[in-house]
Length: 162
Length: 277
Image (cartoon, rainbow over all chains, first blue to last red):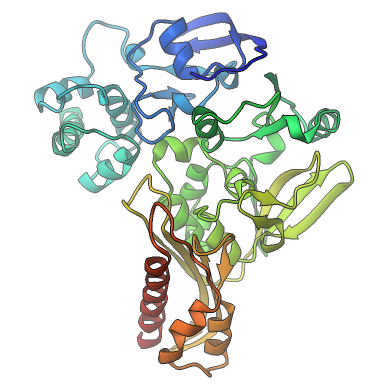
């Protein structure tokens, strides 16, 4: 959370998980805090707060980004997908199921970012090598699993999609 | 904090001419700026977001040069096939740059204007003799990157001036980038190096080596390369010639002694590999 002694406000309009949102926000509000505190979308996590760990990953206009490194004012007019908006049904996505099937989750804090990164990777490259999966995941840190099962899960999701 | 988002360079100049530099900060990708605020640096009174300046996003390929807009993302640079083939060191630096989330957001202009001694695109830009185009209230001017970066975080940018693009000459040189960090990704470089060269069999007819994180600014190893180009140096002389151009320090990531040795080892390995080939 950032602070400023003389806050200014901004009339923000942004589409989040397909829903058009209008809010008056302070200009120094981070996107991550806007999602978590203002909108209650707590799937995006804060761990390092400085762009190292990827737990706050969201999809901004089609690309993965760290929402802790972006001010909410910067996304005026943009389209954002968070882990909550990955699917509009109650069903898990192929990727989420694969994380479950491969037991790729321990504490779970990094998983929303891992899943979003995996989804975007397969969208671009439906059959990545293990090396390519690891490269893509280099901005997402996990302190529990040792990564093997996370890579297995993304590889598994690619196989299941055929 | 007042947030400004000019939509043209002219609007930017008018806006920033009316604001004091002392209370104003420019925002590009934000991947270096936001962590500073997170660590407690005071937010500015005025933040000027440059991302609506559509003239700053382009990769223009001409017969003899390539011009890269200052807001081009690291990811876009990495994916550009011409940069990959003709400016391989720059491609490699963009490839090894942080993680995907940062590459999507970080910009070439931000990496230059930050003027970090360890900025990963900088050695390649020095070794390719990149020319920067700046626009300000007094018009447009060109500066070599070597004259633009004055020290850590210090540049030749004047009040209300903006970095618009980076131009690289298409000389057909080969190049590579090497980086040593505490881990492969997401780590600030302990040492980073770009080699730009052209050779016939085992004789170089062009050689430039730029090295980051071993001095307050990126340095080129000119003492070494000039003796190699005129064939007067012997491999035994290389370490001293390299040391003459660098001044590494001890910091949280590595000691000066380690940095020096890594640079010597990497340069030797490159030269031996090329000359034996």
